[in-house]
Amino acid sequence: MDRVVAAVVALVVVVCLRLPAVAHGQLQVGFYNTSCPNAESLVQQAVASAFANDSGIAAGLIRLHFHDCFVRGCDASVLLVSANGTAERDAPPNKPSLRGFEVIDAAKAAVEKSCARTVSCADIVAFAARDSINLTGQASYQVPSGRRDGNVSLDQDARDNLPPPTFTAQQLVDRFANKTLTAEEMVILSGAHTVGRSFCSSFLPRIWNNTTSIVDTGLSPAYATLLQTLCPSTPNANTTTAIDPSTPAVLDNNYYKLLSLNLGLFFSDNQLRTNATLNTSVNSFSANETLWKEKFVAAMVKMGNIEVLTGTQGQIRLNCSVVNNGSTSVAAPGIEMAHLYPGSTASIDNIATT
Ligand code: HEM
Ligand SMILES: *[C@@H]1O[C@H](CO)[C@@H](O)[C@H](O)[C@H]1NC(C)=O
Ligand SMILES: *[C@@H]1O[C@H](CO)[C@@H](O)[C@H](O)[C@H]1NC(C)=O
Ligand SMILES: *[C@@H]1O[C@H](CO)[C@@H](O)[C@H](O)[C@H]1NC(C)=O
Ligand SMILES: *[C@@H]1O[C@H](CO)[C@@H](O)[C@H](O)[C@H]1NC(C)=O
Ligand SMILES: *[C@@H]1O[C@H](CO)[C@@H](O)[C@H](O)[C@H]1NC(C)=O
Ligand SMILES: *[C@@H]1O[C@H](CO)[C@@H](O)[C@H](O)[C@H]1NC(C)=O
Ligand SMILES: *[C@@H]1O[C@H](CO)[C@@H](O)[C@H](O)[C@H]1NC(C)=O
Ligand SMILES: *[C@@H]1O[C@H](CO)[C@@H](O)[C@H](O)[C@H]1NC(C)=O
Ligand SMILES: *[C@@H]1O[C@H](CO)[C@@H](O)[C@H](O)[C@H]1NC(C)=O
Ligand SMILES: *[C@@H]1O[C@H](CO)[C@@H](O)[C@H](O)[C@H]1NC(C)=O
Ligand SMILES: *[C@@H]1O[C@H](CO)[C@@H](O)[C@H](O)[C@H]1NC(C)=O
Ligand SMILES: *[C@@H]1O[C@H](CO)[C@@H](O)[C@H](O)[C@H]1NC(C)=O
Image (cartoon, rainbow, N blue to C red; front, side):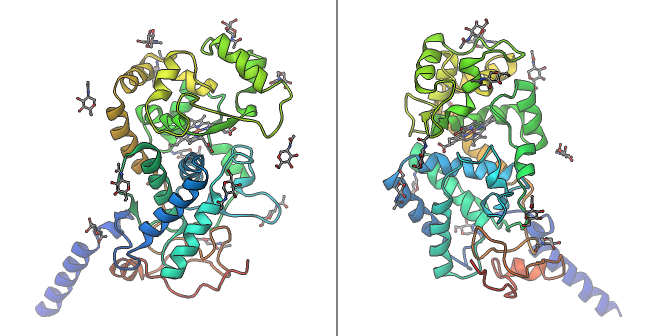
């Protein structure tokens, strides 16, 4: 009896020592070390190749990770396509502006060829954002992985969770707090607007109406005139402009410097200067690019943890835009197995049909 008890105690101790991360559903740097050792380099190659063709793709991939994580957590729900056009990617915050889907598909194809049914689309999105930051900003960081893919994608969730460019400082702070991010992290992550582009619609009311309930004095009149020329009140639906026109493809701290010159493109960007606390952060990042980059990569890692699925939750999608056939995943024992053999999945999923 004592020996049985001792054996049980020993087993419990061993299990507890070996499985702390899974018990808490945590992500791990190098999750695919043994199950798919070249996963991260294959993603990196796909991103580098797309970037060589179009450097703007890096901005798209950074934003893709943000828009994934803020809606149902970082579960690649943003990639799902719905037959009737009611998925996250069809919602106004994502359509037509979100880009980089085909880069994720190319990375997924390369990874599947090397190690089938092992690497989640959600992790590929997180790796691709990191690689895009490396390419545009010479900043590097390790991405904890082990995310699993979700099977639900609703346009209403994107409308409800993604902050619009008309938000006030308080609304921005509240929205990020809801996703476990602090007011300072909101300012830090907004610095991603140092790269990329915007369609006219995101700042049109700002340049033509200027009648928001809060008087908007944060846009330089000369810049507003320039933007009016580019974007008439009924603009061409395809016209875009750089968010940071000084260095649109470089991840630097110019975003914060432009805010101080009333050259922030969105109403929401300028809001960071209207609150003394947020403004203090803006000023320190404007003065110290190294400081901002250090905090930016840390905040990206934190953002990558929002409401993640781990263990046997969700699934490893085979095609990033389609939920696996017959894939009702059930929480069950086997979490331990998934941990001891990271990346191993019960091979019960049918091949996706499209
Ligand atoms: C603070 C709240 C935020 C608001 C209100 C906001 C709003 C927007 C808007 C309106 C656009 C332009 C969309 C269009 O083309 O019309 C945009 C672009 C972009 N956003 Fe944000 N954003 C926010 C936070 C973030 C965060 C946290 C990140 C990433 C960490 C991010 C990364 C980007 C990037 C990289 C682009 C350029 C995308 C491209 O060139 O394809 N944004 N954002
Ligand atoms: C994967 O390998 C790297 C580099 O040796 C190490 O830092 C990391 O902790 C490993 N991760 C796992 C989950 O084994
Ligand atoms: C290259 O980039 C353009 C957009 O700038 C895109 O239309 C095209 O599909 C890309 N080609 C490849 C091979 O990625
Ligand atoms: C769209 O399709 C989904 C299933 O893919 C369904 O749940 C939803 O009700 C449909 N929406 C509309 C508006 O038809
Ligand atoms: C960018 O990524 C490459 C490959 O992982 C790495 O060797 C390099 O150090 C990174 N660049 C920076 C500046 O961290
Ligand atoms: C975020 O908002 C949702 C819906 O309003 C709420 O259910 C949830 O508890 C909030 N989460 C946090 C961390 O504030
Ligand atoms: C200006 O505001 C009016 C009323 O809110 C709105 O109907 C119109 O579309 C706005 N025009 C532009 C160019 O934003
Ligand atoms: C908007 O209105 C305010 C107050 O009248 C004014 O100070 C500001 O210059 C205007 N902005 C633009 C872009 O016209
Ligand atoms: C926008 O671009 C698409 C694709 O290139 C084209 O078919 C469409 O005519 C363009 N729309 C306008 C208003 O120029
Ligand atoms: C600035 O924002 C912080 C965080 O939301 C808030 O606590 C503070 O009251 C705001 N300050 C002002 C002057 O609005
Ligand atoms: C923001 O900082 C700038 C630069 O120090 C300063 O001129 C401005 O008054 C500050 N605004 C607020 C609201 O604190
Ligand atoms: C800028 O920030 C870095 C990183 O926190 C720090 O080491 C450095 O001392 C700061 N530089 C200045 C001039 O404050
Ligand atoms: C999606 O996953 C949840 C649990 O992860 C499951 O309850 C549900 O049946 C799944 N739906 C589909 C369409 O696979």
